[in-house]
Length: 524
Image (tube, rainbow, N blue to C red; front, side, top):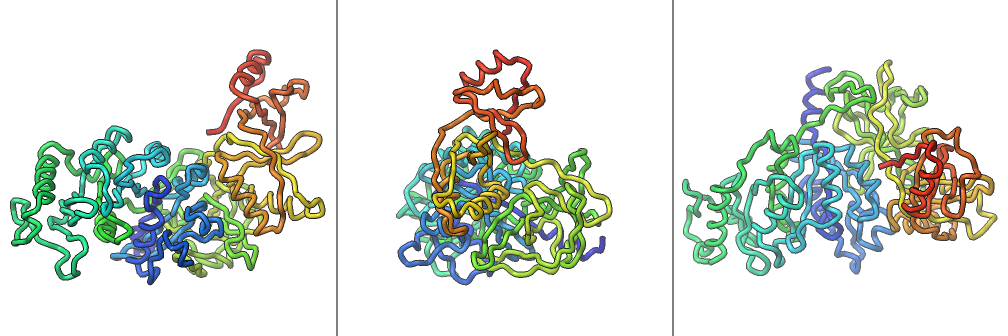
């Protein structure tokens, strides 16, 4: 591999932003794009009345609710790095799509609301990062409002998440009395709401303000200095190796809405965030990003990003080598080869044709139905598969039909495309072939209904059949239809595999006691 391509790969930083809904994730994404020059005007989620919506929320339902329900990808340059942000759905119902997105990044930025601390969804996503050993950087947001004490937040991080923390900066005051942050790493104080020329104040050798300033007379400054002394004496030491191993999280305080502390965070993050990381194949061979041959895996498929063209895009995380438009790639699962003439990259709300991309980048390949989530694509002669992406066991199920029988063709086409995106799971009853959809959370059904109506012009009728315990069968050949009953429905999934949908855990245990020879298993 030539030196220029190696340098390009080493400039890449690819991360996801994880948080609970409303912690300010979309707002901070906007500000990062703003610093990278990708957008000129950072619109915030608050803009519902003004009709100005967040740049990273493109789907109609997201604009209505002010939440992110799909994982969008944004790319920009900053301080000689090329940054790829994957904006994951923050909504609690979207753990499946979010989980797969976290398989495509090298680090994660966790946003915590200073008033609420660690919330349920943050904890869930954090566990996924820990499982993969992904480095985590923490941004404690909304310091311009009253919140929990900073030391309490640090303690919560360590106790609830079980990870060591190191405060890179520290707030001076909070809410209406928020004066700025004491920047431990850059050895300066950054003032809140001040002229740009007076924004940074220097510290002396003892870590005190080196200039005469009215801030020195406040109790907030005194309190911050006491906290800093405590952190220096009793807190964790900063250790880059621990950060990269996912055992220590650097913590930054700020306010995304007022654009305070975000640039400092970004500059520091880029110094410590990992470059593109190797990935294992299903034979446990490690593929290095600097490997000559192009390879990558599909972690997401999105239909109708451009409603005017009814397009489908497969999102590929490039793991190794260099992609060039016009190259021939092999889909490892089928052995089919394709010449890639249409490929795209994402810059905020714009998409543009990409001529070249390297390991660490996310590109979109136009898809006419060839790709599936989890597929590996390779540019060399040797085809292989990367480790499988995890699938979740759905918990909620509905029977779904088209309200207008004459639209059954559009109905089946729409379902097929949305199922291939991985947002919902598809099942059918054995003889009547009724369609049953499974999802991890209720919002996925709402999004499905909304998109069927708006993108495929089909109104659907959904009949809840409640939460079920779904179990797949290792020894399918031993299953008989006589084993079904009112509490155990036998269906087939989209791959034509048998699945039992049990009424509850009791029904599952009863079945296992009665048919001991049937080996049941569940997904994640």
